[in-house]
Amino acid sequence: MSRFSRVSTEISRFDRAVDRGFDRLRGRPVADRVFYVASDLGDFSLVWMILGALRGLRSERDWHAAMRLGAAAGIESLFVNWVVKSFFRRTRPIVETVHPYHLRVPLTSSFPSGHATSAFSAALLLSDDDVLWPLYYAVAVVVASSRVHVRIHHASDVAAGAVVGTAFGLLARRIHPLPPARTVVPKAG
Image 1 (spheres, rainbow, N blue to C red):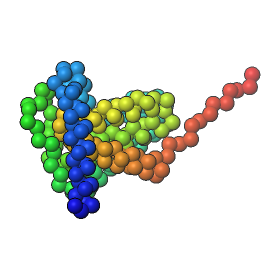
Image 2 (image 1 turned 90 degrees about the vertical axis):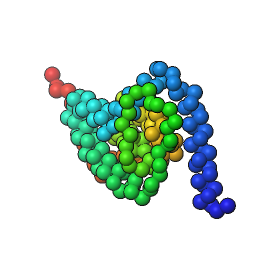
Image 3 (image 1 turned 120 degrees about the horizontal axis):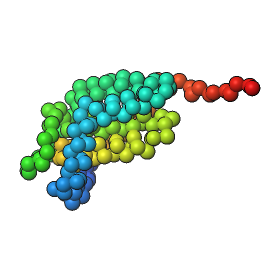
Image 4 (image 1 turned 45 degrees about the horizontal axis):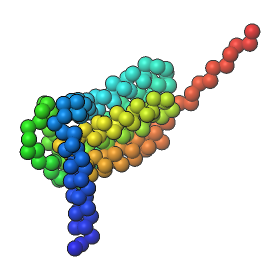
């Protein structure tokens, strides 16, 4: 067995194990609603634009964070969907049941997950010097994992997307750091 075949076998084993884990949640009304809504809000980075806009309302520095997120999200989406995915022709999981809620099914390659890529890139950028960083990462995990729950991606697509998104977010932070925080000096009486 070649090295490629062994890696492919291990990836398939990982995907099946994670999918079996999600089978315990599928069909449960609350879990289905949460994951389908999260998947829907992840389309076109909508949830990240909303969270970025909300952060941008807090201060001028937060406005810079929101603008950086918007620019990075556009570049990341083009890079992943038009460049990275063009190298891979991975098919999406086969759905043998009817989706309980409406779901847009993309036509691009399954690898890597664009939802996971944008989620972890956005979470990393939004969390930069923000006390709400746990919220951003929690939303990223739910949005990314929703793609496995709704059977639009394999678990390995999501894992790869998380890695690519994190790398992209780190690069974006390095290229465009936030301006220094202003310190307010009290006036002498």
